Image (cartoon, rainbow, N blue to C red):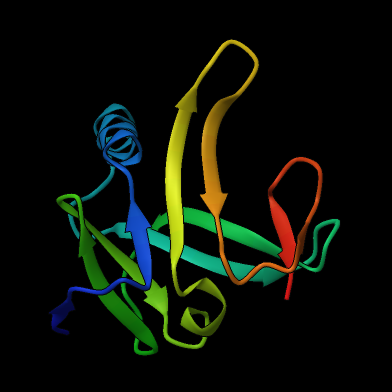
Length: 114
């Protein structure tokens, strides 16, 4: 599987650092890449998936900020232009998705509709 550079899904430097910390702290195996995807559900219809997983036959393999990730090619339609950031504020700590394709989002930002 070839690694592609894309504008489809981007990581901020802060998200890349946090992913590296999690990978090291949890002892994630080297053949598991960061999966960014979608599943049905949540307040607004589609919820984001963020996990370490092995690439599958329907995946596109990407590289961003030194992090290898995989996205199911069927999900790229909904994730094109999405940026994943990591916030470390007093009132907001965690991964945040910014998806220009989302027409509406839930209050917590973990799901959206198109």
